[in-house]
Length: 79
Image (tube, rainbow, N blue to C red):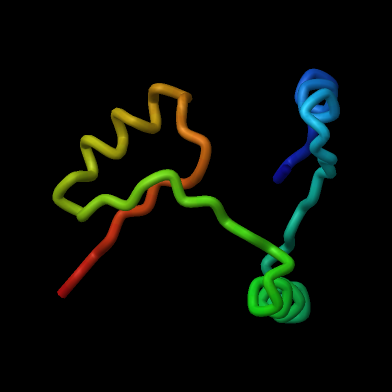
């Protein structure tokens, strides 16, 4: 969890059988290389709730404000 894990989040996650750990990433080349390797190897997984065309950004924003999404909301930009 970027920025830390609250006691409440850790408790709820533990009850669901999920382990949590905080992390902080500094934008430097060695760290980004390690992160890229983790992504390539499948060590990091991003869950996408839904993808939207850029024209649907307002709808994506409304959905995000519900606080009921499980994954990331993605805006797709095409030429």
